[in-house]
Length: 298
Image 1 (tube, rainbow, N blue to C red):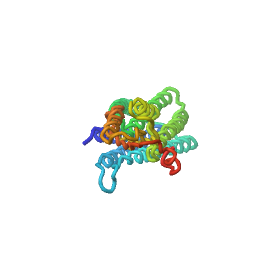
Image 2 (image 1 turned 90 degrees about the horizontal axis):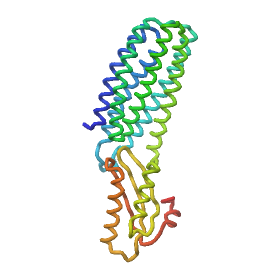
Image 3 (image 1 turned 180 degrees about the vertical axis):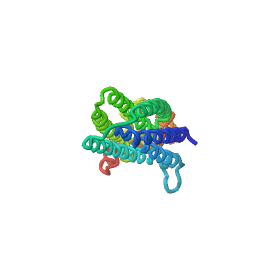
Image 4 (image 1 turned 90 degrees about the vertical axis):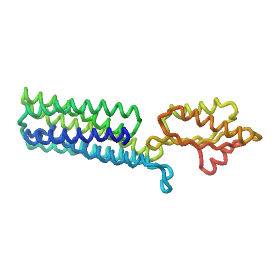
């Protein structure tokens, strides 16, 4: 089992523990903020389960039907997770407004405070763990999960502050107003996850810095006269690069092949942790104008 899937298993266990604790205290206390946090933890559990399944599928090797593998399911998972988080944010806002109108009181404040402190400690440890895995693997699903639980950490802290204020002042409206703020914050953060998921599914190019490094490698290759039709995209842990290199017309095939392999090796060394699928076409002249007519390059 990959380290990414192990990370999602840890997230699932943490989400289950937090869901049970928050639901019990939330129902007993009547705090919208605690109940909102409980709902978020339940959603966390299901999302982490979905992410685990998505990672398992994305790790499957290319086959006759899926020649490039199934890495794009990571984008689908991120999109799904983002939409779920947005839905939970809207529900939190709805519940806060409803309870504010009905003026429902909060009880068992001390128990609520204790469970939120416990939640902050547990989620804080999980965020550190997920961030470590995300930096090590650069996996979009783990990044999304880390961001998701990071928002939980912020919201749990906000809920704790609101409960302390209510305990010492009796200002119950703080719980409701803070719940609305939490809901809006969750929606804002989730929109970034949705955006990244969409970009992956729509074959977004590699980041600007990586593309510039690829260009620099090609320009510095002594026997490459020019290049065109440079296109890049990513899918999970795979980076795809397509480019046409212009070489001397009478160059021997063996030398041309050696040049292409050298360029490929240097591109792969940009990020050795990634899987690179590089397709380099050697041209005896600049045929970019033909490709532009055929809409095969910019």
